[in-house]
Length: 212
Image (cartoon, rainbow, N blue to C red; front, top):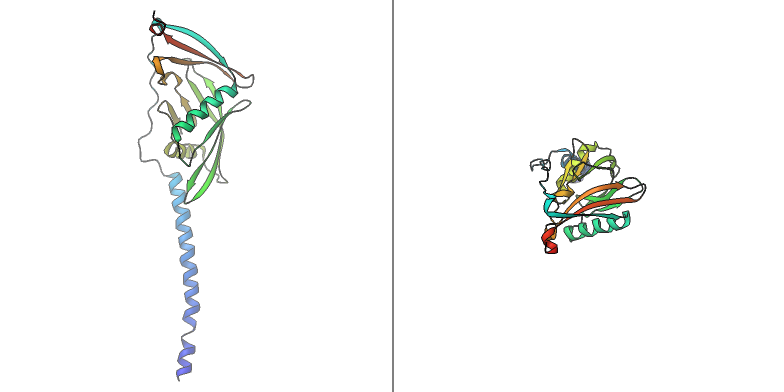
């Protein structure tokens, strides 16, 4: 009688393995669901307001035109990014390519780093700012709408106050004219011709800097 009772107690152990397998599958499903929610849910912070038109009076300043190359501007951009991000593990870099601005970096979710690649077409605005229109974008092997990826970038990437990410318009507005520079210098983009490596900027220096 005792042996029969022992034999009858064995089948539940097999059913336990099935239960553990179901629990593991459910846990993986929950992690995947959380990852998708993390990407698709709108940010809790209010949407950034479009940059206000810069109010600048050039009557008491001297204007200089500065010509540069992609290599020099690229070095300046990434030096600024490194300084602002410090030890942030989700850092990114910007490369001025043959005909577009290329942004690369990564997003860390649940301990996994997902590579990010984005290509943007620069367009100089009449007021001297720069509009970067999205051309291509990828977040690892995930096939996601462009505006969703931009919303994620806007939420988790640290950018200067004068940079506004517009997910709905699939663009990034760089308000160069609102950059706070020492000695009240003012900068405007004049040309941003990447194919011909022709980049030029207007630099306004207050006359009182020269003692005038």
